[in-house]
Image 1 (cartoon, rainbow, N blue to C red):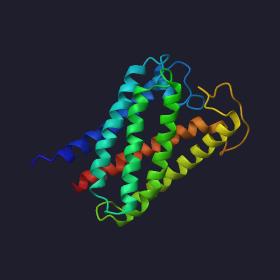
Image 2 (image 1 turned 90 degrees about the vertical axis):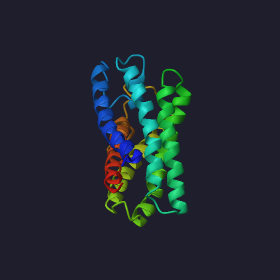
Image 3 (image 1 turned 60 degrees about the vertical axis):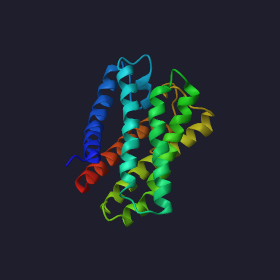
Image 4 (image 1 turned 90 degrees about the horizontal axis):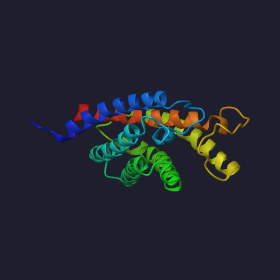
Length: 216
């Protein structure tokens, strides 16, 4: 019997892997790109040869994320924390979609707002998801370990991001002209931690999607 949710979850799982490949290829096609000096969104700038491919893939990712959230909501208990996490995940997904439309070089202010909304909504979504996952009969409790992994990487990134805003008062286009001192919790590594946090989030989505696919 045809099951639309299985089709969507299968396509979504495959697409995440494709998107990770697109990310890697885009960094190679951008001459001079470095994950320690450039934001991920720089891959969608005019100077990137894969600009169109990257931005389109981000829009598709946002669209597919909304379908994933809709399916995920069916496996969560009917609680306030579940409702809050679903709303936050929808905000996170729509922010991804719009960031592919309002790119950094087309509208810097809007893109920065969407980037902040994306990470902060995603961060609090992963916090509020912990209890519903533990209460769910369909999602394995060990997924919470992935939540904690994502929250750890996101916390380091957001901590560094906040420090940067406090020091610079705004978000620089790149970090290649800035040299900060410090160790792991420093602005010096903020672009790297953005990559680590984003990839961790994608892996979480992939594993949860496969888990739901097995249950559907």
